[in-house]
Image (cartoon, rainbow, N blue to C red):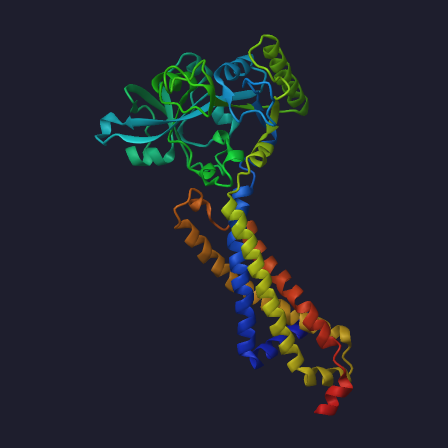
Amino acid sequence: MFAYYARLALRSFRRNQVLTALMVLSIAVGIGAAMTTMTVMHLLSGDPLPGRSSTLFYPQVDPRPGERMRPNPPDMLDHTTAMDLWRAGRADRQALVVESEIRLQAPDTGRPKLMTQMLSTHADFFPMFDVPFAYGAGWSAADDTGHARVAVISADLNRTLFGGRDSVGRTLRIRDTDVRIVGVLAPWRPSPLFYRLAGGNFAQGDTASFYAAPQDVFVPFPTGLEINDGHFQQFTCWQLPEVPGHLQGSDCVWLQLWVQLDTPAKVAGYRDFVAAYARQQQAQGRIQHADNARVLGLMDWLDYNHVVPRDVRLQTWLALAFLAICLFNTVGLLLAKFLRRGGEIGVRRALGASRREIFVQCLVEAGMVGLAGGVLGWGLTLLGLWTIRRQPVEYADLARLDLSMFAATFALALVASLLAGLFPALRASRIAPALQLKSL
């Protein structure tokens, strides 16, 4: 039966080629605009670690002075709190992280010095976040405690300095210190860069920087504090440090702690531990607002920071509104096309075709227009994503159509065309055969 309706639709398309082309183009342009922005939204709002995010948590404690308690604790931790929580070792895995800018050189390559970003962290960082390696591996916990001069570098830096070859064992000079490369990452592009994300509530929607590429150099946390001392940026200070950039023991929040908790019981226990720690520090007089402490899951942390940039959300709504306008245009075109065939429909009704058969035939025709629009809309979506990849924004390289959004393109085109065809099909099915035959 569907094949019969499809043959009728194709015959109708050939008789009204211009009108059919206009309908296909209207749906395609709307689908292309909507799917371009929806694909970007999908990529930027997804789970950065599917299957693992439910075990990752971010503790917060409020060490700020003042009689009035703020609605939320600071997005980062002060040095004393961060080290206390880390030394307690209450998680299955845990890692402190802090980002800083460095100047580095590979002495044996003859290349000039370059400025890049370094992440000081702990050995658990790599297994906890499932970081892939192309060569070598991360350092050990003993390297953390021993302040070892070792480093892991990104695939991009390895390609820049060593042509992409295995560089394990080579030397980097970071500022005035030599470190040995023990691992090279495979291409790794978490979206967003969740482990160093903070301050989204103060960004007023300007959060594109959350989708920057990962740091080029990773070193043990104590090592990073030593070799880059004086070059760390405080997030918030209630009293400026005596030596700018030297933040150990300062009245500043500037560190982040991530913990892995593998069972709900461990999550509850860790929350109790953080709350008890805050009360203990309040009793000792170091902090004043013990109740302003919490432990958020990874996805809750992303939501709290409103990670999707405001302009992406706005563009998505505008594109959906544009798709709605295109659908209204398609409704008008379908209505004109179906009513123009009133005589043909009247004859079919007189020969015994039911209203239901006429309605289904018109919907099949609308659906085939939608599928054709989906094919063209898919091409326009690829063109739109290619254009975004040429834009100077941090997430530009992420703008690619995955399998789920490819399927969504055709699903949206089909559903949109069927919705657009409902009213015209209903009007066509109610055409009175007697009046149409009388006018022939």
